[in-house]
Amino acid sequence: MAEAEDRRPELIRDTTWLTAADLLSITGGLIGQVILTHALLTEDYGLFVVLIDAFALMFMLVDAGLPTIITRDVPRSRGQGRALVHRTLKIQAIIAVIFLPIGILSGIIIWPDIPMMLLLCCALIPIVHIFTYAHRSVLRALGEARQEALVKVIERVVVTSGYALLLWNGVSDPSLYAFAYLIGVCCSLAWAIWHGERVSKGASGDAGENILLSPRELLISALPFAVTLGILPLIGRMEKVFLAVWDSYSSAALFHVAYIAYLAGLSLPQALRAAFLPILGDARNEPDKTLAEVRRARRLSNLLIPPGLILGAIIVWLLLPMAFPEQYNDGSLGMSAFEIFLLLLTGWAFTMLAAPTYVEVCAGQRPWMFTLMLAEAAGVAVLAAVLTIPAWGLMGAVFSSIIASLALLAASILHSRTGLDGGIYPWLFNAGGIFFAVYIPYLGISENLPLIPCLLVGIILCFTPWYTAWPWGPTSAEAE
Image (cartoon, rainbow, N blue to C red; front, top):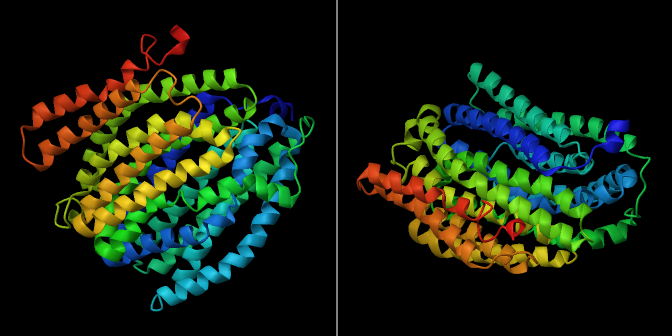
């Protein structure tokens, strides 16, 4: 197991593995959602989506923030990774025993008329998924992001294959599709445990500092991240839930279709953050090294934004009409899925800009600052949703999502020790350029303005982040 002992987290390599896995997984997920939209009625599809998200919200605290501790601390003490994973799973199992009955009972009360099989499968899916996090985290912390990538791909392959088999047999019962989803999550759990145990056992020769705290101390150290888990899902899921409450399940279904495509883009900043956390965890007590790594990650994220905006818009514009039924693309539900996606690209770019400072706050010496950062962003997001969705429906949900991403960017800059490295003006320059790069083409599509000039202006503005990414940019301290 010399490879397990020698392999270390590496930003570009691990980001590449995780991004590739996310793209494959979300491509499979997109195919799966296409199958669901053709197999299920719009109302049934909307209900299925809302159930998955609602139970994910109910059981989010089962995570307890402990996998973040694994990712952050194991690179400094590789030999204790396996024991820390086992302790984490025991704590999570106890919490799950408490929350699962409460969640199922709540589901029966809220949705008394839906089949019990559908309810149970949708309740178990997030629980089983959470149990994969500990082993996935230790794999990433030990430099084996490639194995974590396989965990994601296996889940999606099994789930999408199950959906396809059901559609082939003419099944239209959402309960059976939920059961196929549950089988896929169980397969990913088995793979994560198998490889997580193998790799962490092989790293047992490097003890490092003591990170194996008692269960009580471990929970206290993870408390800021556990509290964060009560906040983070509000950014992304609440729009669909609020649309279902204040508008209709059909609106929630349409927003979800656009959000699936948006999630494909979010895989890139999520992979960047996942790969970056163990690197900053290893440099946690070295401010100069932390600053250098943040600058490197910031340059990488800025360089990826322009091609991401352009390619994302082109690919989704081509695929959505081919993939989803007509009602999701013709504007009959209030907007088209592509119009929603195009505006959401603004939030994607803001999320990319925030990735380095987001992780720097998460890995820093003040973990409660991470909780405060997300609480501020979520508070702004909830307020925006409450004010906009009842008044403007789908457009309100889009505004709420964009505002949430912008609030997260601002909060990460505020609470990061490296946020204003290079000054505030590059941030304002990038944010303004990104907003108009997306909004001007949207006006050309939705308001029948001259489309070609709008698209050309949007493409030019897409490249504004490159100004601060190249060596002559004002935030590039390496050139100083």
